Length: 301
Image (cartoon, rainbow, N blue to C red; front, side, top):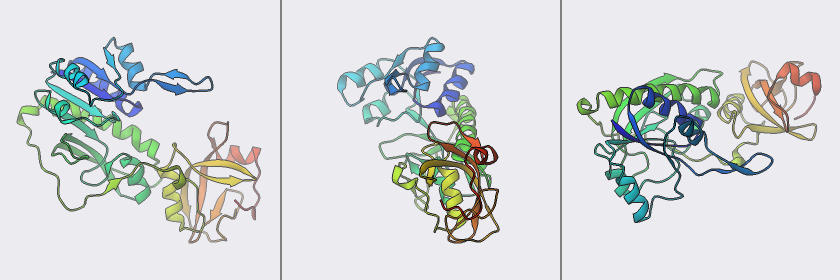
């Protein structure tokens, strides 16, 4: 098929690769514009732009698709279908209607659960036992379109958003290739009206750990916000991100270190912190971290 690909972050890159490997013609790649990054604050292309240019594909990064000119440019590509995955711009109705088979979205949840911006984070933070990928026919509403294909996957007890992100990206890449191969024979199933939830964008204010909460909630917060933006607390006056953890059978005052294995008391139960990151440093396992910053039992976070 002749495809317009629309995506921006790392999550989208395996999908672009899979479409190219499957032999589809990529008419153009749409992504977010380069933005200042790094210490020098120089414009840095998005992961999708970098990969598309390495593949020799045409890249477009309009700031908006609302203008008649931008919509005409899109329609002129004469696409059979647009594949959209974590693009980051609202698609106006003329764009949705331009490809012969419309626009297909790869969404990282089992719709109608977790429509919206942060479905992977929210599934982990909520303690969902499973999540998955849906291939959805896009329409004007927010992730409301009918579903062509879906696949569920369990969320492991110590799995982070980063772990799940990578697995779902691979599932999405495989599933969209299957969907395109069978597109004439697929039936779009309307989403259920019950069970709708919204995955609001992660607010940085959610990242600070409240040790008075139950250990299960603190653990899900740590794993759900790992690696970005990273749940954090203050240790010896320094802000430290906690990137991996597990609940354990222990009890102590909230925020107090209970042993030499970085077990921290919570409002109910305790969590053992497994991986941390100090400002300006790389992630470290707890053993390495404690060698550089000892925290004897009784220390308060």
